[in-house]
Every structure is written in C-alpha cells, then in structure tokens.
Amino acid sequence: MAHFTSGEHGKKEKGDYYFWTAYGEDKFGDWKTTGRATIDLPPPDRFLRTKRESKTVKNVDDRRIYAALYRRLLTIHGIRAATYREIANWISTHKSDAKYIRFPVMIRGKSYKKIAPVV
Image (tube, rainbow, N blue to C red; front, side):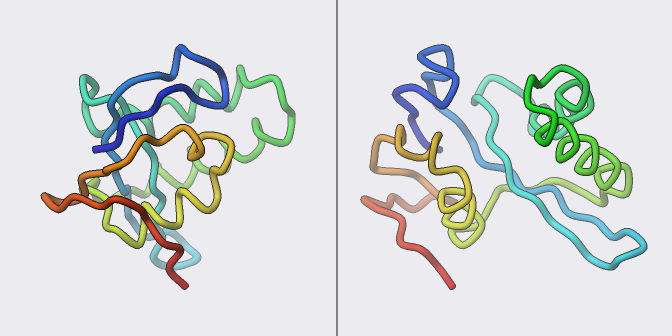
C-alpha cells in the first residue's frame, strides 16, 4: 500500500492505493502490467477502467495506449498483488504520479522507506 498526497491530475488522486499486477498470455506470449487502485476498490478496477479511458482520455496517444492495453487484458489469466520489482518499474514509468508517494510503502507485508530502481 502506498499513500499519495496528490497525483498527475491533482488532489482528487490523494489517498491510499494498492498496486496490482494483471498477467496473461496473448498471441505474442506472456505479458503482465501493473497499475494502482484505491484501497476501497476491487483489484480489477484499474484494469477495467482502461476500456473507458480508451475513449475518454483527452490525449490521442494515451487513448491508443489504453485501447491496446484493454485488448491485451481480454487475454487475462489473473490479478495479484504487485511485487517490489513491479512497483519499482511502475514508479520509473509514472514519474508524474510517483513524485506524490509518501513513504514508507508497504509491499507484501514489508515496509520500505524508499524504492530503488531495479534493472
């Protein structure tokens, strides 16, 4: 669990979040993607929102990304709690949101004062 003091879209993103990883297999092979959802939402919520976001997000490139992600999610096998490595990767690819994380962060029952990039 991580507490965000805000987010890329402002104070409305303030709150406690869980990180989840969806995984599956499509014609290109195994895949996985990590996202966050507020702790009051069920694990699939973040991934289900990609369908709506593929039509409503203002940035055309982002709409294309969400549409591709939603198509991939149609081949989902499951959703599980994200690992340290997956959260570190999310942080490195979502810097505009990640800067609002207030540490410590709890990952699979362990508290972290910082999350270092993992190669």
